[in-house]
Image (cartoon, rainbow, N blue to C red; front, side):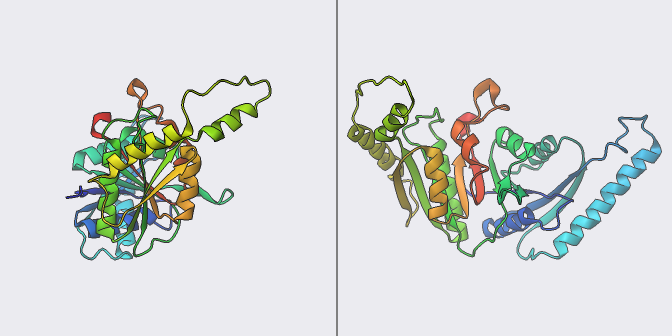
Length: 310
């Protein structure tokens, strides 16, 4: 039985006209048959009572702003089909947004956070905000980052795995990726593609020899050995863990280039990736591949973490 999300927290921005994350979260709640909370966090330094002495007047202003935001949120929900979904609302006061979202997720026991990313029209893609990156580093369950674009009835899910553990990933991370991706495929009636990028010696040698003055060194291992090692590791991973009908892509190249290219080739609607927080620096850095590709992908991102990495 694939893991199922049990409670979803949808982060709603009061400054955006279109609430793609809220609509995606409600659709997921309907498919997973789980409750969804629409969460808005507001903050205005001029009435926060921090720059000046707090007063009853400022407190009333904060409550009035929360009330009007709550009315706005309910009006937004009235324009969305929420049939078959238990939807609640919550308006909180606080800053920074990341800490407020993490605190709310912990309080209600959310195992999936759904949030919009910011669209940058000059680059024709979405850019992650500081809040997005901090949620990736700080949330211990699953984070679905919604990017601009249409959502089909039967989405294409792309799962990215690295069974050779070359990038110091926790042992259970690939299994977690496959479980979550298989669950999304099942409940959304989608198509699942699993992608693994293995290193190519010829490409590496070409890159090194292209550097002026670079010294050449004899290679102790052939490309055939590398391919065989990665193929066996991928076969072992997929044995007993692949959802029915899964297509597997075994591609030579750097993870960054392969993931970006294949997300376009298969027209992925969501990419399921593992994120790795590095020990004492867990709030400062993620795994290198995640840092390089997450905000460059042309589709939604579903980031998960293995149990031993939390």
